[in-house]
Image (cartoon, rainbow, N blue to C red; front, side, top):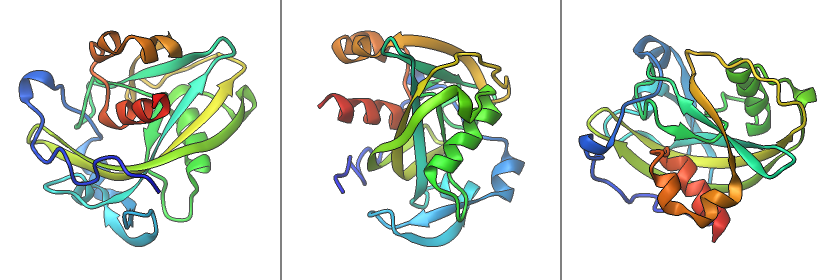
Length: 202
């Protein structure tokens, strides 16, 4: 498996260029994520808050990208209620599978919960990439993940976003992101999504 700066970017992100994001404290404290080694082999379960605090604990994650039939990608802005990277722009959905759940199953769940998108609205959901990375967010927390990338084609674009999860939505021509990096950097992208895009363009 190729990797993306697994232990790099060890300095916290500058507060002047950041926003804030993740979930409410009580939610994180009650949830478990799947701890993994750098090759995504499953280890012990990790408290979700612990996985994102201090130096973090490496865990399994995913970011999923929906495209329309015109080659546009659906970007979602993280809700201001998020603890880490709040108001940053992300791919369509991103989260963590629970024990015994595949990334495809977790993607289906998050698409329905966050956007009201059901499986009959998209085709060809599949894993296209996987990478490891570590990024700090100010002094608030850290992401230390092996992140799978999934893609699908949205046929029915009816959406019902949950405001507790999604601050905004935007359809963007994917080639624009590729050809105009200065433009997309103005959006303040979540690090996992920016890495996924950069790897796809290389």
